[in-house]
Image 1 (cartoon, rainbow, N blue to C red):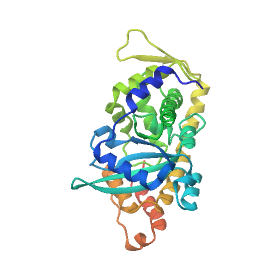
Image 2 (cartoon, helix red, strand yellow):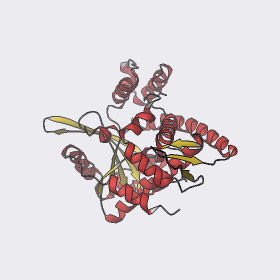
Image 3 (spheres, rainbow, N blue to C red):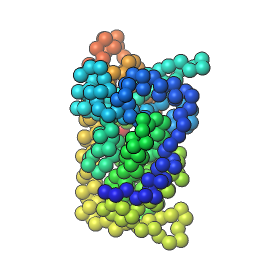
Image 4 (tube, one colour):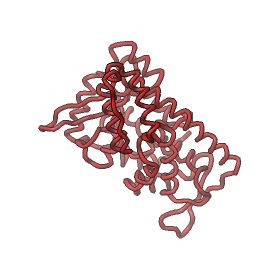
Length: 317
C-alpha cells in the first residue's frame, strides 16, 4: 500500500527529535550493549508526553537488524524471535540523580510487519500510531523505514478503529475509542479513561493525522463542511461493524494471554521485575499486593501468582 506523501511529511515533522542529555546517557549505553545490531531507537510513552525524563521510566524501542546479532547468546535471541519484543531495565546515574528506562528490542522487519495491517493485534500499531520520537538512526535509509512504520501505524489504527465509532465522528471520538480498545486488548493497569487523556496530550497531532488518513483504507471518510473541530462521515456496512466487534474481542483475548507470556518471559531480562510491576500497578490503579520471600526466590512462579492476585483485585483492566 502506498503511504500518503502528506502523512509521511507530517510524521517526519513530528518524529525527529534531539534526545535530552539524560535520555542520551541511556541511548549511549544501549548502543554499547547491542553494538552494530542497533539500527534505530524510538522514544514514546509518558515521559515523552510530559517532557520529564527523570520521573518514572523512559520508554524506548531499540530496532535491530536481527535478533541473533543483538545478543551474545542464542537463548535471548530465540525468545525475542518467538515472542517479540524482549524488554530490559536499565538505570544510570545522571547529574546526581538516576535516569531509568524500560527498553524493548525489536527487529526492523518485525517493526514493519507489526505496524502494518498484516499484524492482527494492536500491540505495535496501537503504540506507534501515537506520537513517538526518533532519537537515533544509524542511516538515512533506516530513518525512512522508521518514518514509514509510524505512518503505517496511523493507517492501520484508524482503519481498525473506524468501524467502532458512530457514522459521524471527530478526531477525539476516533482516537479516544481506538486507544481504549487498544489498551483494553492487553493486561493494563491504566484506567478506562486513558484513551481520552492520551488524545488531550497531543490534540493537534491527532487532528492532523486523522485528516490525512481519512481518504485511505477500506472505509474512506469524508469531511463535513462547516464543522469545527472537523467532523467526518464514514459509510460502513453493518456487517463490517459486526466483524470489527468480533475482531476486537479476539484481540482482547489474544492480548491478555500474550501479556501473561511476556510478563513471565520478561523476568529473565528485567532485574527487579516483580517490584517494578507492583509499583506500576499501585501507581496507576492503587492496588497493592504483598510479595512473600519465596516468590522473590522463584521469579517465574512469582510472576504467575502475582499476576493472578493483581487481576483478582482489579489491578489489570
